[in-house]
Amino acid sequence: MSEETKALRSLGNRMRLSVARAVLDFVNDTLKLQAVQIQLQEGVVRDKVERFQNYGLTSVPLPGAEAVAVAVGGSTDHYLVIAVDDRNYRLQGLEGGEVALYDDLGHKVHLTRNGIVIDGAGHAVLMQNLTKLRVEANIEATGQIKDLCDTTGKTMASMRTAYNGHTHNETGGVTNGPNTAM
Image 1 (cartoon, one colour):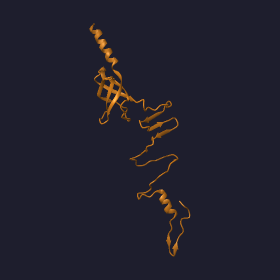
Image 2 (cartoon, helix red, strand yellow):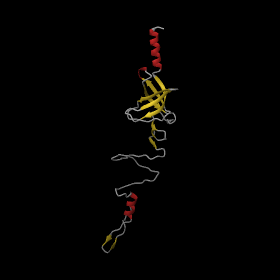
Image 3 (cartoon, helix red, strand yellow):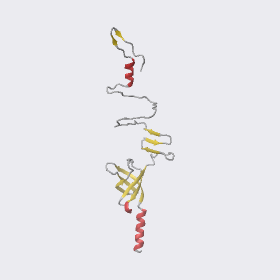
Image 4 (tube, one colour):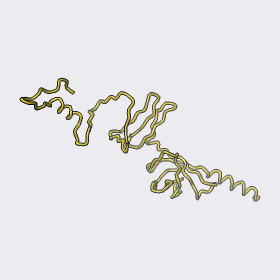
């Protein structure tokens, strides 16, 4: 076999192995760039493989998620994971143009064609570290609204009760309650 044929065969092998399907075994999310352990085929495991994610979005996939691994320069000793998906939890049935953020527990933020749907999967939705929350829309609630209106712990309902039943001591007697209830 000529040197040229050997070189072409070697190049062909490197190209064939440059992109591979993989299964995630472990994720290390404590590093500046996430590292994963992947299984490329039966018995072929690579550890500390860098996982690239899109800026502004991050996730920690569960073991068993599927990945696309790219061998840098065709070297099977240096893989990068460039995409991860998990067919067990991926949302299905979205319409063209829709986007969703989701997890394995059923939480999701779905940008639908008709508006935004936030599904807490039976858990609380918390907004924190805000200086102000401004809602420029009508608000409907099908559940109870609990409020805290001042720093003493009084709610709007308790302040309403106090206002509606209050009287004033006047010279020689007590006034009636307010003319108009709150």
